[in-house]
Amino acid sequence: MTLNDFLLPVENVKFYGKCPVEYSGKKYKLLMTDRRIILFAKRGHIHKSNDIVSERLDRLHGLEYSEKGFLFRKAKICIQGTEKLEIHGPVSELKILFSSAQKLVNLH
Image (cartoon, rainbow, N blue to C red; front, side, top):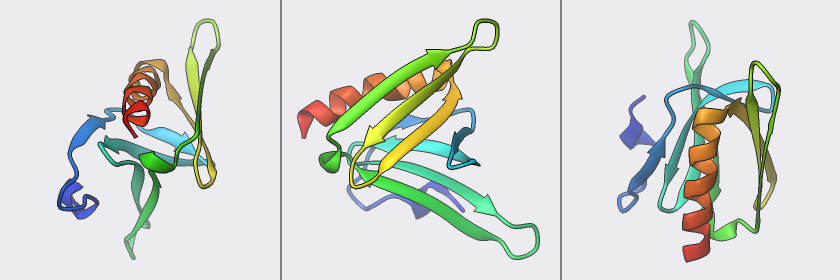
C-alpha cells in the first residue's frame, strides 16, 4: 500500500501526518490533499485489507478544534461534511491539520 494508491491523478499532498490518529475507535494515518482529507490503514494479520475514510474538501461546511488535558494534551477535530468525522490525536498533528484545512476549505 503506497501513498499513490490513494491519490487521484491531479491531487497534491498538502499535509501528511507523522503520528497515527484515532477515528471511530480505530487508528489511521492522516493525509490531506488539495481536494480531500484521507484516513487510511492496513488491517489484518494474514488477510490484509485497506481501511480508507475520505471526505472531499468542497463538501465541508464545518470545522471545530479543541484540546484537553494538562500533562498529556490531546486534540480533537470535528469535520462536518457528508458525515461527521471526529478525529482524535496529538496536538502537534491536529493543530496543523486544522489550520491547513481552514485555508483549503476557504478556497472552495
